[in-house]
Image (tube, rainbow, N blue to C red; front, side):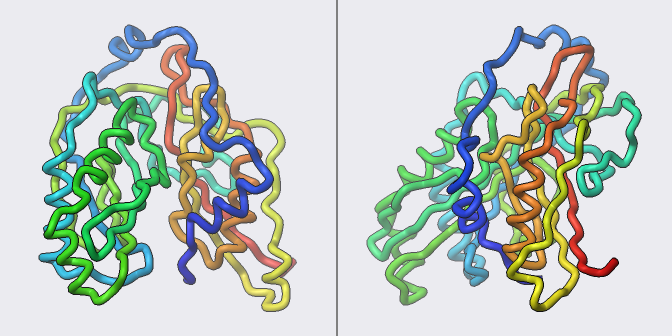
Length: 291
């Protein structure tokens, strides 16, 4: 499959939409309800992956140098709270729930954020962008601050000069979720924590299902296409565009078509005893001109 530039996808999408970064006004606190719904706890490790978004590889030494310089400057926000729950094991199929009936399931809060930045030959760092927001209060700001404070470090400058380039585009991914075999680089441990396991009802699609249109610029080839998208559904059942990510896609055109359908759709939000919560949803799309 061809790689998809998330920045290009969002640029195309956001040109005609104004949903980016918007969140509904939160309702009454559900802290006591969530505490009562806790059924267990689990130990997790937050892992940091450093990647080149252009697909190039860093040596293990260069990758470790940059990660170490950033993570040693990271200071977690206090209080540190995670408010997004992980997805269920069954992916939603083309916005149709695998199980139309509500059922109680055990879920754990999830930390996941992606941050893009560039390092110059002098070790300076440009703007740091959270291309996928974690939604953990204060966390994205803390990561951005750590990256920015690493600017000017001689080790960063040495890495860039060693690649004989004016600047090096990098992507930092931080997650407490499962290992992602697509990344193909070892992570560095950021921190460990014990998180609650809570019984909740998963988010699920509801109402009229918007169709993902077969892209016009793919019709000449007429090939089948696919895209797997991931985003957070908020307490109102809306897809938060600031968390949208293409897990993989046959082309950027298929990814964009899937994204347009995905964010137009409304969900019944995940909830715990009547208290709505944020949850990650993953949706695969398939495209074909065949009858």
